Image 1 (cartoon, helix red, strand yellow):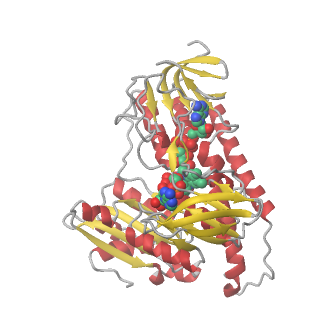
Image 2 (tube, helix red, strand yellow; image 1 turned 60 degrees about the vertical axis):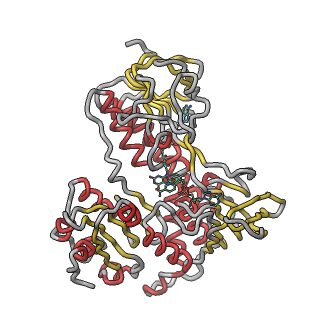
Image 3 (cartoon, helix red, strand yellow; image 1 turned 30 degrees about the horizontal axis):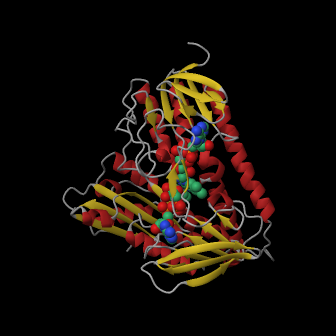
Length: 464
Ligand code: FAD
Ligand code: NAI
């Protein structure tokens, strides 16, 4: 094969693209991955999952040192914030991980081509003045923040998540527009570090896609932590001034406008697929009204040599969903039966405590007319939770009323993001709630809350 010809050319080096490139190379295909950014890893590693989790961890430690350690009999004197060091640590975590991907490319003999990829034919992509030929092209160009009409993001005072991960000083008053995942995670970071945070949400509830009972509990918990919520409210305008930002908000259903002054505003109202500069339409690839690349069940677009995965296609905008699609499409291209089970994709909100879900919510089961039983167990009665002083939250299992098959699991509480993996494995294996209930769980662990919730489905929890 000529030097500029590949079995697979992947456009985009995020979790979808880089995982696809590595898996395709493992399967013996000759692979190139084109990335326009300075480093590999995409949104997730550079300005998404990783820097946000680094700041969530640092700010949580700061909050614990400020408020919780004394109760354990540990005196630390005055707790001081060194934001520059916190940010430098975050950058080092990002740097190490993005370099790790470059190392994995070398190890797996994936060719990394730096520059903007443009699809110029069924089998051709240009990058940095070079044309590369591909038997198959995989579009994995991800997403970008959704703009809010009439509001200019300057990434200093009016920021997207990218700016909110890099404030040089703690904003005294931070307004977050959108009570979604980014708003609650980054709102939590800055609240813990001392900001007065007000979250303005268009709907009358927070995190709209989440199980309603979990969302209500999270709402109350975050209020107790000092986040203020303005639900059913929309932002009419936001103007950056010398000393801050002036926002005008009004009731979502219409009414008197009100002015709010802030030092910074984070706009987090969702993300939209990114295909700018790719020239997909010239290449004949169909994109829908929302900008999503249209694919079939095997990730193929209407052009038979061009595939697409990750945030740029339908489904939740999550790194692990993009990764699993990357693996599946690589396997399809190698002649195997690549597949993603969209019914079992966990989601985690990394607030304190964490909130995690997999499968159907109660609202979805009710809307679908599915007969189910719910088993619930509070972390108040979980002994590990007691020893940690982390008793806020509960685990809830929803199981089919007739077959007992687990249909959804929702957890808010300590390490919920880790606990949900057990539920995902159980659901992949088609488990009944009784299967979880009869599985021996170590004591004392948070995971016993999952077992007790499974017991509760049949009305036989031991510790409540
Ligand atoms: P991306 O990661 O966006 O990667 C696409 C890549 O393509 C980018 O590097 C881009 O530069 C490149 N590209 C685009 N166009 C071209 C072109 N024409 N030529 C060459 N390269 C191009 N998800 C989770 O699961 N867990 C989390 O905790 C989490 N936290 C998040 C926190 C924040 C603040 C944000 C913003 C997102 C978070 N996400 C999280 C979502 C997650 O980042 C995305 O779902 C994931 O990155 C999608 O992967 P992807 O490969 O589809 O796209
Ligand atoms: P989101 O879709 O989670 O939430 C957006 C919120 O903004 C919704 O509650 C919506 O009702 C509200 N909204 C929309 N328009 C509005 C307006 N004009 N005024 C006020 N509120 C408005 O989007 P978000 O938080 O921007 O995150 C984008 C995506 O990134 C997430 O959906 C998720 O896929 C991914 N992500 C995942 C994380 C994780 O897995 N832990 C962390 C962060 C992001």
